Image (cartoon, rainbow, N blue to C red; front, side, top):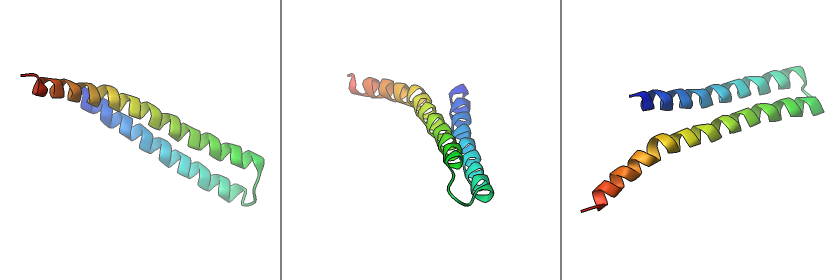
Length: 79
């Protein structure tokens, strides 16, 4: 049960990071419609936050899902 809670919190954190990134990009576009180097940096940092969040979510998914699946597979293949 704890594993499912961790998994859902992880998924929620990635979605939250994506929504914050989308809001940040919209605000930057509104404040600076023309291209500006600092606007680009702000957008890149927001995208990097989503990437980092997704990377750690994938690691948590591996730890929570792959190991139990491998155990079941080994138990199933072992006579």
